[in-house]
Image (cartoon, rainbow, N blue to C red; front, side, top):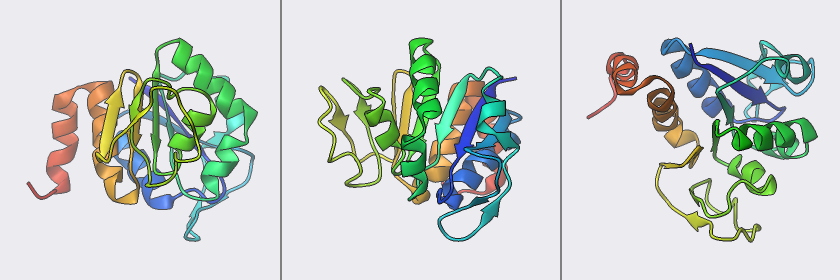
Length: 184
């Protein structure tokens, strides 16, 4: 069974975080949510999320994928956490999946992971970065090598379904997507 780490920071975008967690768990992926500290997370719209564990404890495990929800100031807290940047670089060196949505691709840019990559993000998020060879797309979800990026809350379901397909295959994606009754 695939194992995915979803770090949660104060002020994360709850629609993104919960959609990703929910759909991956529907696909029977082992999802571990980890707060940057040992406190409950108050998301950007005031929803309180209780992580499975704290990041220090989660880092004792091995994961096939890390997924960064966006939202502000959550993204800034992820970006300021040296453990997150170190883990992203380690996972990238191992060719493992690295995914970020909304403002969170900023963390990937800051960690030096977007050179020569096609990416997307919440509009304007990556403008401050001068990343060599980065190609910006307005697509809902972009997969380039082991890097997966997405635009924002409205693309969270497409993003999560793409993650399922990458981890578990198209048949598992279809099995999760069908009962969701998404418009064709």
